[in-house]
Image 1 (cartoon, rainbow, N blue to C red):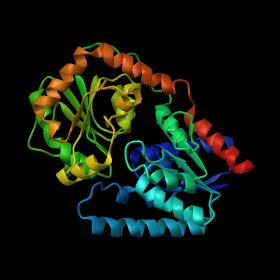
Image 2 (cartoon, one colour; image 1 turned 60 degrees about the vertical axis):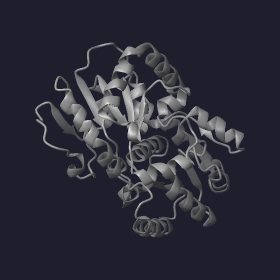
Image 3 (tube, rainbow, N blue to C red; image 1 turned 30 degrees about the vertical axis):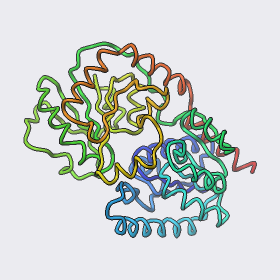
Image 4 (cartoon, rainbow, N blue to C red; image 1 turned 180 degrees about the horizontal axis):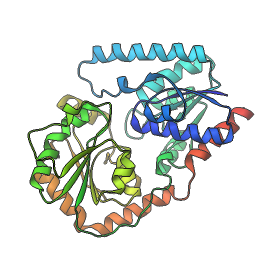
Length: 359
């Protein structure tokens, strides 16, 4: 069978790669084509479009962004027509994948969605499109499956492909190595790095590793002059960097969940432009943005959002975490219980194979 996989950023590229490997185990002769990045390329998938053009967030300069995305969209359409796949696997990237899914369904393609739009948080009207245009849907969180069931949308929760095998004991120890994970999008990195550099300057007793994403220009990580003998940049997989850390400061996203699975104490940060933030506030209706907090519906991890992200608040938040490790451990244990002992990628892959051969 031929599959087209559509991803829009680093974590969905990693999920796509895990699904490809899973499908290969149960259907070795399958062929894969993708809008993706380095992880999907390593699996042998043929990359016909990169996803970096979608990674520019926000509402500023909308005309140029729309033009760029439209070019990508038309190229993806043309490649799908040429490949004529047995199924299209859409992963996250709601804005792009909802539109593409609507087109693909109208063309008669089988459409599969992994990590559908977070309509429990914003834009619930998208549920109509999800229900109408996707044949098989996998959520990555148990509360998402419950939410979609209430909306009369059939979904399956089989775990999270990126959480497999992530588990370690939470140990109380002095902080020495701190991981800085400023995000996977240029705008995210630029917005948070000034405060993070101030923190690294203030904490001369720590060793810092800054997680750098390959497609983001190095200049986006720069801020002032600081001795780098105790600061290093690394493009190693974030999971590996987390395993080496005693504490993590992480921009909201999948990495916060990986830190929880690995029992790494953390603070969640996020900052964007004033315009983007205020528009987002009108659309989002959840109490938390961090996945660990959403999964347990409690503020087990401090969140420093927008103007709350200051040097003083960051220092206080880290002290707060270290003073409440019992609370953190209980929350992390609850999170890991959702994903423990699940071979998610292989299970999802087998479910896709069965669906396509029996539909």
